[in-house]
Image 1 (cartoon, one colour):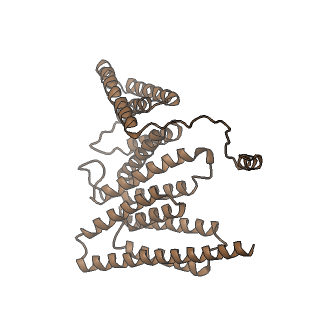
Image 2 (cartoon, one colour):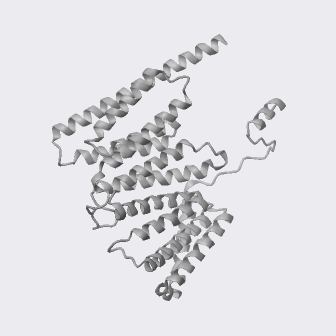
Image 3 (cartoon, one colour):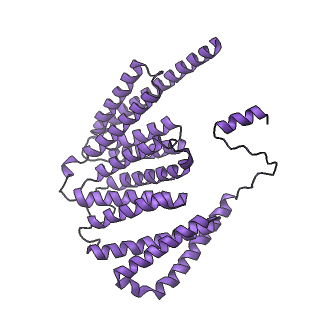
Amino acid sequence: MSRSLEIKLIESGIAVSQADGAPPIETPWFVRAIQAFSGWLAALFLLGFIGMGAVFLLDSSVASAILGLVLIGGAYALLRQAQSDFLEHLALAASLAGQMLVAWALASVLGTTLGWDSAGLWWALLALQVVLALIMPSLTHRTFSAFAACLAFYLAMVETASAPTMAGGLVLLGLTALWLNEFRWPAHVRQLEALGYGLLLGLLAIQSVGYFGQSLLLGRYFVGSGLDWLEPWAGDALGLLALLLLLRLLFRRHAHGAEPGMRVAAYTAVLLLALLSLQAHGLSHGAVVVALGFAIGHRGVMGFGGLLLLLSITSYYYWLDASLLAKAMTLFALGLLLLAIRWALQRRWRAGASVAVEEGADA
């Protein structure tokens, strides 16, 4: 490597090593899977022995909370030193056990059970999961905690305001802001990506149960109180708001290449999507995630968006409040809209690429 190239790489923040040693050999996926399974198996036996010896602690909320916090603290210390999948998943299992003990203690202190109003419990668990998602030194744990935080937030919104789709819309706004700013802090890209995957999984779970008309607590159907008069329009409105914020940020980043006609076409597509969402609720969420993955060039995010779109279309197809003709026309219009957007983007890219080539040739 030439000295000038090395200096340019260092100035760009890219670490350069002159070591001639062989690159480290990555562990095969099946070996890592066996190690993870071994960690969970060992954790189950260990926690089983602890549970048999400390079952009397469940009678005391203070003792349960202390033991749960000790397990979470031990998991944190183990994760900081973990160098293998076995130790990481062993610590993850211990942390989950500690979280369940803390939840049990919170339920006892707040005087709530799963059979009646438990909004305070879900808000408290949401705060716990947010803290764990931010501090735990494990990408797997961060993803799980972000996912659990979404579920706790969903249940809290259901119990507090009977607004399940509003919860999904707020989660969508959060994950849109997170994925759009993941490279703002280069040292924490992987941690932010783990949180983003957790939010995507949470949104997928919220959308899945929302189409069945009941909460995640089986048998607990939505009650008509609070902000239920906003359902399901609130979730669609928040999804469209996330899409508008995404377009605004993209136009700001590429202001030199964003023609007025392109802006008009984009906002017209948003308006048409809003009209379609009046019939097929949830389409806006899948469209936002697809557009988000397309904007940041992330195939995984686009895949999640495709699943959300497929889920909303399937739910709409089996919706009994609309005729087959109305559903067919709505889906036909949606297909034309997506094809038109794809055609416009491809045409705009080709034009931009031609301009870039001409400018390079002139230079």
